[in-house]
Length: 79
Image (cartoon, helix red, strand yellow):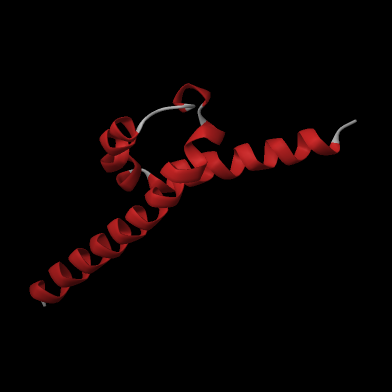
């Protein structure tokens, strides 16, 4: 029983981290400059340095990216 719980926790953590890695790849290539003006023009060294944080905090960054996209859409629709 204990082994099943541990296996479930590790599988869930692995899936979470895999999704974080996939998201982080797209975010660091396209989304970071849309969500943070300070990252505009940043080099690959900076992006590699923040990769672990992006992997762990991917749900928060996804929400921020979506909010930035919604704000741009709203801004384009307003006259």
